[in-house]
Image 1: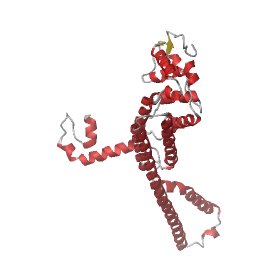
Image 2: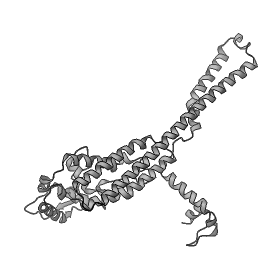
Image 3: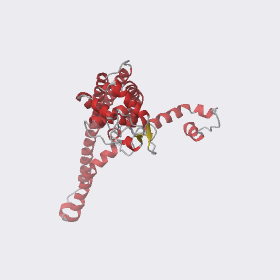
Image 4: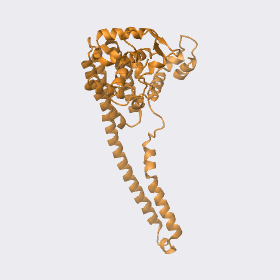
Length: 335
């Protein structure tokens, strides 16, 4: 803590009372906090200096000119050099400088156009993030959640997310992209997370054509599952028990998800819970998202629908649980 306070304001910190030196350096401390937060979201290792880019771009041309002059100096006869006067050399240098000035003007023009383009992209990115926030908050405000309303929310959110991804890829890696990434984090971990919690609390397998009697039986059987001796990681219990319930013959026979819902759920998972798709969005944080914890029901439904490739074990519950007391009406699959 003392090191942190010294970094922020140059003051020693010995307790809850801050020394006057820290207060006198308050503005500098705030600037350091702001810069450290923004740098946390900004990727390093990118060349952001336009002058360096320009030098690299035209270094080959300069190298070629030097090579030609050296070749002429070595191989050209003396008659080629003696008519050249000092003023001729000065004129050549002036012409080269004029050409370089023209190239720099073109580069500056292109840079200004690119800056305007980036500004438009940043503004549109912020607008799409606000739309995602609005859709998530609207879904959270629904007192009754149905399959239709969930699919509608996922379709709208996926549309905005797809547009955002296309624009986000076109942004240059600089402080502006870091700010956009920071606002996306705010939307994802606050608004979207709250929307998924609302989905998890209000939706169940019973909303997908599984009768209440069958669901009650499956829930009762899941409650008496016994451990195989290998304990799952904390947070995966709900997912594993939902896997078990969905594998029960009675449940799998009744479970039905229409085509529109299957596509909407699969695309939603790929856009919001696939680490490969989110690795750039989540730069600067613990960017390992697992849908099995975030939304167990959505994960299990996508596994059973198999609209696209699912890279996880669809019967992983068998590694951790077994049914010690098997009821006559139902037997778990694979037992």
